[in-house]
Image (cartoon, rainbow, N blue to C red):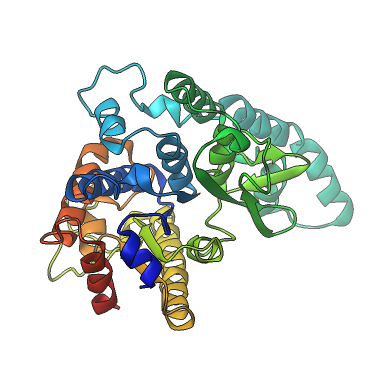
Length: 365
């Protein structure tokens, strides 16, 4: 750790990086933040990080805390038994594109006679795959609308007097996204997009491909930031951070059937393949994202020994219990508790000492 950081004793040269993980990842990170604030003294709490970088669901939470709202206050709003007007509800995230999906099916059905005539003229045999290929080209670009989440964030910002634009925010907030057509990273920040609105950026970063509609921004279509960005750690280091704290709920499930039970719909213990193609795809995505993160951390620790990187994440077994589905809204209370307890254990005995936190991270490798 640099002498400058050690003598300062606070977070002047620190960055908080929030990864993705869907709605369950959002609650896991919120639990981590609550525990961090309980264990850390004034000057070293979440609100004291001068730089916050958010990706995907982490971008939504980053936008809230960068506006100065304490994690404990957010948790109070979203408790299962809360009656707060800003309680985070399922309908604030999921608005199915019924009209667009049904419309695409109707258009596909209407095209059937023409397709059949075309096959007859060319003497080709039609297959169900041909019909599927035609229909999906007419389908919407996402199953769910982004509008409810955008509206919720704007209500949240208004209720807490948070500036809408990056240039007006006191904190250095950076939100990652992916340019769909160019296939390259895109960054929202005070420097790159000063007039962009923060809720808009957070929604773009959270647009999971196929689930949510890409977000239009100045001639670009933007999707989930975790597609093009392996992590925000390098962004933080380039900005001058000497301590980077990463909250990452996106870890591969560890389905060791001799130790744990992943329940199937019928109640029996199952392998991941037994849960269908979506579970297989999600596990593959977790492996990909986590492998990239681990590779980044190892490389950056070697290249920049003056920077300390702390990664707070669940074990594979913990993820199996509470984080199996990133879209599972019903498990939010359990996931929040998991993040809280896991971080409390990690910080046990630290007593607000940042040196002890990073020493523990170095020991874990």
